[in-house]
Length: 584
Ligand code: DGT
Ligand code: CA
Ligand code: CA
Image (cartoon, rainbow, N blue to C red; front, side, top):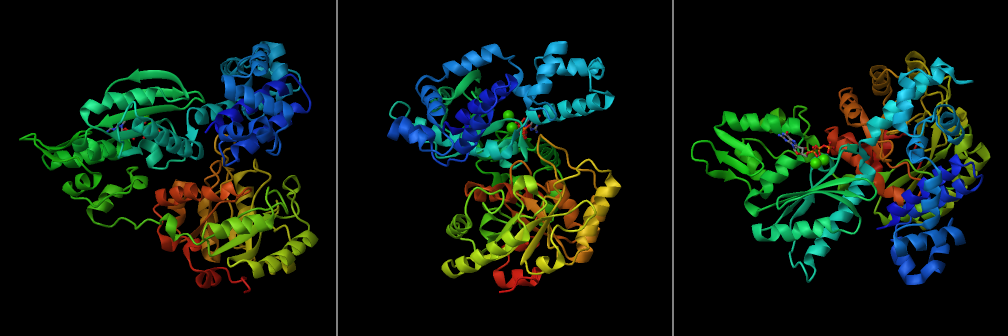
């Protein structure tokens, strides 16, 4: 799909326009980009089917943006944007992504020091130039230094939420290309490996593995390097090729013969640390393990290699799911047949954190409920924002009650159980954003921190622990508050939080939004040691968000969670024992 590419293009144009201080356009461009990202249908197909009229029917896309998109689809570029880029410094887009840098500040930095990109900015920070700028003390300079560090950390890696759909897309495109009359290779076995298969929260590069006979390998590689969105072919060989896509992602493809497929899958899934541990076990047993197979050291005969399962088996281990392969004790556990039976997607029976257009969500209550029912869920909780969340259109009590009324009405029409919930702000003093008489009427109260992120650890810990002490709070939402690549977790003592939550029977959320994934795998492992239960929630704003469950699930599996650990695997009758305020 071209959607992501076009969205990126519009975002970039918006950044440049903002820099040039064009007033309204950046917002319109970003809005259009967002619509296209969430479209769920290939924009190219829409254009092919209905032309420009089809494009302008998409909300947020007017005549001029539709013209740009059409031009891009026809010619691969937009004349106007190319000109814009020529006028703005080329580092504009990357600079704007740094927390604390908006259009105005960027212009100031460019005028004063000629800062045009991130590396200029770093140099200026290191030379302590910025603190000399008017209204810009030492403190701002330090903050900016941290923001740059964070930008660099995250920009060398891609979010799982972007990499996974992209890999799926590349794999199906490659399969189709190989199947075509010119190539005639049936790729029956092709899969993504590496950190992506382990479902890490961020991905360095995408690794893909395919099985083919030796004489077919080059044909597969030809098809791979000639995929439509390739920007650069870094390397092309008969066993490995590497490309870089137009939108910046690097992809490695390896092609191996059937007798090595399992060994290569095991090897290229990693992690490197897991592989090293595994190889040492092989050596102790008198074997040699490589990406081609498991071999006897003496006779050099292959002992296993077709499948991953037989490799683990021959090493005296039960099969280890990819998400566990991080050298965190999984090999020892596998040797004793003591691995957890990980939670699976089919175990999930409901989604208990989502928004509607009563607050910040994009869809009506009815649409969200309908989609959740279509996904096969037994129950959902509608959890719009509480009143003090003004920027997210938090709801006054009257509006909340109007929503209850509508939920009661809709409950008669839908089979799915609809819980009246709220994402209630945990205020700075640790109290909740609605009075008790409202909270006790709610089926589910999801408590969340959305402000005061820079508070000292002691203060934040007190705030959260005090909210956990509230008898009406059920779930702690996105407990660390981090936004991948944008905002570090706030300072908080998790030992204290987990202890208090365990003592008060509160549930920890695993937020599935790709930019959150919060709790992350490491915190999940720690929280589990306190005997805590979890819920995996999507925190959806649109119907397409409801599908992000797979990302939260991945983190739960990386955190060694079983079905029993996660309350939204429970049937409704049992869920009511966990959340005692549920009334029907
Ligand atoms: P990434 O791309 O940084 O998110 O992480 P990975 O794990 O995908 O790493 P990558 O792409 O460098 O390599 C893919 C897999 O290949 C890796 O998970 C394990 C395997 N591998 C790579 N280098 C080595 C190595 O030096 N030794 C061993 N045993 N395995 C390696
Ligand atoms: Ca990789
Ligand atoms: Ca790689």
